[in-house]
Length: 273
Image 1 (tube, one colour):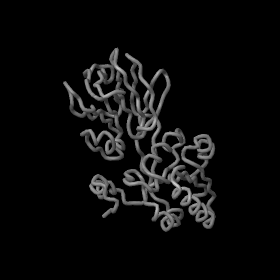
Image 2: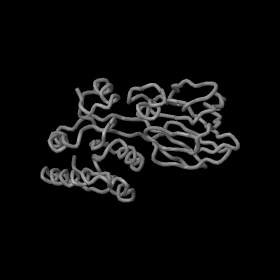
Image 3: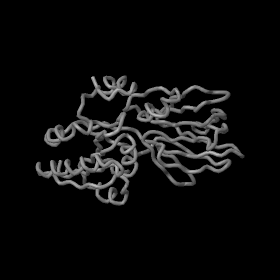
């Protein structure tokens, strides 16, 4: 590795301090680096090209943000967790300084994760976890769902989640959805608090295209990874499918790491076995 980007959560003082320490460590090992806030999208887009690796310091939310803004480069990401859960991060903040030299010399393996593409008003948006259409109020919303042009049903619910395998352990899981293997390309369709009709999860094949249309008179929003939100007008629809872009994670743990850490992550235990 010759050039590494260091992105930190701007509101975490600890993250900025760790970024400086990592920069010093990389310099001592002859590795060029650059750093900035993960929310400085202009600088990230400019600097990410030509980088061999990007370190994301913060938590899962920081990684979700970074994954979207470095499209279409697919530079490998390594997540450093300063948060509570860190489901998609690779190591804790107190581990990185001792582990990074070995990683630079020996590398790791790259895990590819599917992303979603949502089309709204002829504009494309991307998500690593999920695309959600949900009510803007405490009342239910009616959403017509089509899969590959075929009507599935009209949900009367709080909303609908379309999730990747990565997102299957996030919002979708909290609403009763299934857990997919991280490298799975299938898509989860998960209703949120469905009142009547089809209230079960569906696992769709990778080539599926899901169209969600808000019923006339209802108010809803389109949410991407819980970070970007766009209002949906009455009768407006959005189309969701797998993105041609992917997120690539640099991993240092064994290939079967997901099974060994799943239970501990889900019960909120930060100590891995």
